[in-house]
Length: 162
Image 1 (cartoon, rainbow, N blue to C red):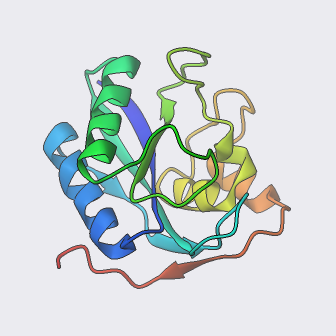
Image 2 (cartoon, helix red, strand yellow):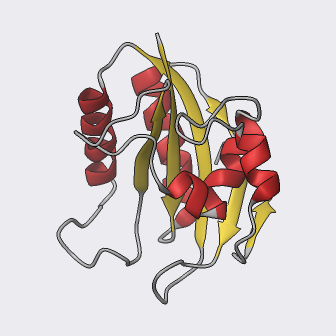
């Protein structure tokens, strides 16, 4: 079984889409590890604030199969493809890591956003503090402690059951 971490984000009907992502991912992968939910300002464009979290799971699926599952879930909840790169999202699911795999295809792993965005690194450090970034060779907790970019992010109370 491979340990994966998934970034989850939404800035459109946020509560609903975060809940649905957790339900769909649990149906696809079984037992999940859930970070807290964090609110952050949109990064790279003007738009409504996002809710973000990171989810850990174990899987026998390949990287490509995981990505296919994520895209199907995004599409089910109204993800618009082919538009602007930086824009609002009903649901955004990104594979952050796949054990210690480093690759460029079918997706970049580990995902560069891990060390670039607080809304990815903070929740990842919360649920996998001692796991090591496959390239930086530092724990996610250490990377979070060293994070120096000014991004506004804060944890929010969140009920996963509607």
